[in-house]
Length: 289
Ligand code: GLP
Image (cartoon, rainbow, N blue to C red; front, top):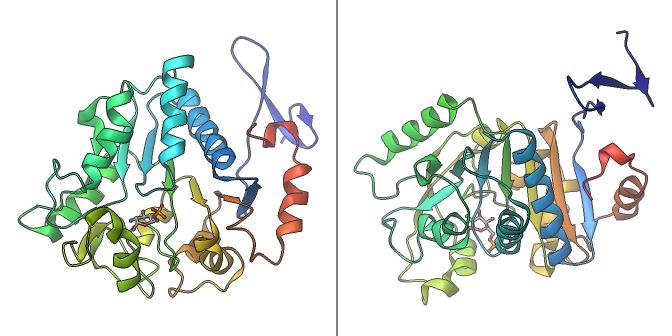
């Protein structure tokens, strides 16, 4: 291939305003370790903001849980202070509890409205969360897949990581090729998420979730995991064998997966120094901050 190259990377001319380096997919799991959750979330928000700025009608896959809360706060700050524009963005959330209506305070639809959507200029009609109250749950799963396909797929999927290695609500041993489906939640997940429900008894035991195959179809993946509770799951996901017992390990197959950790969640990694080395020797165009 002809054309100008810098450090072997093809340079493409923009119609106006100088030159732009083509960004290449990372083709291996990119592991970034930051001092703490705050720094990790700010970095994650920068990655998402860049996607939205480069593609104003981007399709974002979003996640719930404690992990991305600070990231959402940073996106809200960028919207207010820097004019980050979500007016043409479409979103698909990973999952939803079965039986919880949108106005239930523990539903994931409610979580997204409260923690992100109502603070930015997104069109709510473009935001999607599986309907856990649907009469026919299997039909709802198929409909969700069709909707994702109908907008051309997900540009970036944000993920958290369960203590047992789950992504979305894909619990250990679920098929690595699964599509949006109905899952029975594990005891571990119920315990981990029960605090907000008050008791384990009052919690839904089922959820609709994008499958692992659905998640892997996203063009890009950004997973965040912080704190000592995630140390084993992180170790298995990044350095363990590819295995359904750790659903997060499926990301090893994705050509463009970025994993942001803090010192606590990274504490079990055998190659932590290698990831730090790679991170500190990135070229300017490979960096996010
Ligand atoms: C929940 C969600 C996941 C989330 C995970 C971790 O069960 N379904 O999407 O990533 O658990 O939650 P937290 O971020 O609160 O640790």
